[in-house]
Length: 575
Image (cartoon, rainbow, N blue to C red):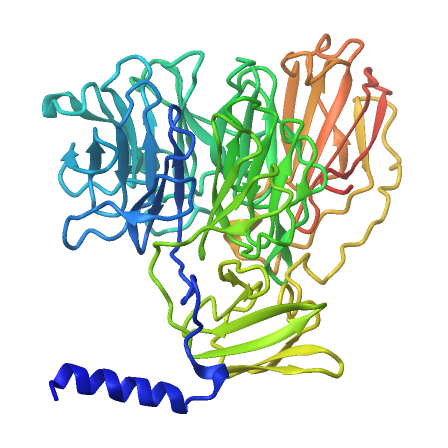
C-alpha cells in the first residue's frame, strides 16, 4: 500500500477514535480564520472591492465585499503592512507600506507591485496629494517625505525632520529615548487647501502643521494642554471644521480651521491604563464619504459611533466581539455598509453599525484543538478552542454562520471548554484558573476594564478671601486637582487648566479666543488679560482630570479689579 494512502487511513482511523467534541468541525467553515488588520481601504468605483493591511499577515484583497479574502503581496520576507490606500481618481491604483517595506504601488488592483521611494523606508501612514495625480505624502518614523511623482526618484525628499525638531524643542521632563512616528499617528492633507498638511504629534502633544506644502512646519497644541493627537481630520464639506482624535483624552473639535480647539465627545467611557489613570483613546477614526458627521472610532476596550460630527457617541453593538478596532471603512456607495478592522480580523455591518458579522474567509486558518456543541435558547452552537489568541470561537449550526471570536478581554491561553447546564454556564479552563460566561461567551467573568477605581474628591472650590484690588479673579468650581504623584511622569505633564476669554457664540461661530492662559496646578487666582479682551464675552475653562478625561464649563466674564468670575466645570464625556 503506498505510504501516502497508509497515512490517510491512519488519520481517518485516528479521527474515528476521537470524541465528537475534539474533532475538526465539518461544514462550509471547517476552521476559524483571523489576522490582525491595521488598515482598510474601499474602492470609490467598485462597491465590493476592499483591501486590508495586516502587520502580521500581509496585504489582502476582497472582490465580494469581504466575503472572501486573498493574499496579494508576493515578495518573500515582506509580511507586515500597516497601511493601504486607494486612489479615487486612478482606478486600480493601490498604495501600501509598513515596517521596512518602502512604499508599494500597484496599478492593477494588487495583481502586480513595484516599490518606489527610499529603499526599506518604514511607512507609518500615507496621504494622497491632490495637487498632482502621482504625488504622495509619507509619514515615516523620522518625519515626513514628499514625492512629486511616485516613479521619479529625484522628486522624493524629506520635508520634515522629526529628530531635528526634537533636538531643538525637547524639554527636560520629556522621555529620554528617541521618539519615532508609529502607525498610531497619521498624516492628513486638507481637501480644501491641499498645501496644508497635518501630522499627529508623538509625546510632545498636539500636532504638527505645514501651510506651505511642507516648506515650513509649526507645532500646535489643543487648548495649550498636553493632548496627543493621533489623527487630525478636516471636514470635507465645511472647510473650517476639524476634529482631532487623541491618544488619551478623547475628541477635540475646531470651528476655525485649527486656530482654537474645544473638547467634545459626550457618551465616551474611559479605559484604564494604570490604577490611577483613565484614558479616552480614539483610534481608527473614519467618516462616511457621503456624511462627514457620521463617524466611527475604536478605543482600547470599546468601539463607537457618532452621527453629529463627534459631539455625542454611543457604543457599538456587542456583536462586534473584538474590543480592539483599529480601522474602520464606510462604503462610498452605501453608508449602511461599514467594515471594522480588528486584531482578530474584519467585521462587516449592513445596518450602519447596529449589528456585525465576521468576514475573515481567506485569512490564515486556526485549526481548533477542541470543539463543543451546545444548545442555547433553541439554537445549536459549536464552540472551538484554538491555540493562541483569540482562544475561543463559536458559530451557529442552526443558521450555518461563520466562526465568531468570543474572547472579549480574554487575554490568556485556554486549555478546554465545557458546558454546565446548572446554572447554564460556559466554563473555560485557563492556566490562571476557570473563567465563566452566562451569555454564550459574549462576556466572561473577568475584571471589567473601566475607570480607575480610586475616586477623586469632588469638593467645590471655596470662594477665597481675595483682595479688593488687583483683579480680575477666577474661581473654578466642581473640580479638584488630581493627585498625579502615582502616575508615570510622562502622563503628569502640567499645566492642567486652560483659560480662554471667548465670544458668547464660541466655538460654533468660528471666532478665536481673545485671550488664553494656562494654570499648572491651580483652581483659583488672578488673571491679567488685556482690558478690552472680553467685553460682553465668557470665560471658557477646561480642566484635565485623570479619571474623567476633561471637565469644562463657562460663565460670563466679570472684568475689573473687583470682578470675580465663578466657572462651574463638569465632566465632558458624562452622558
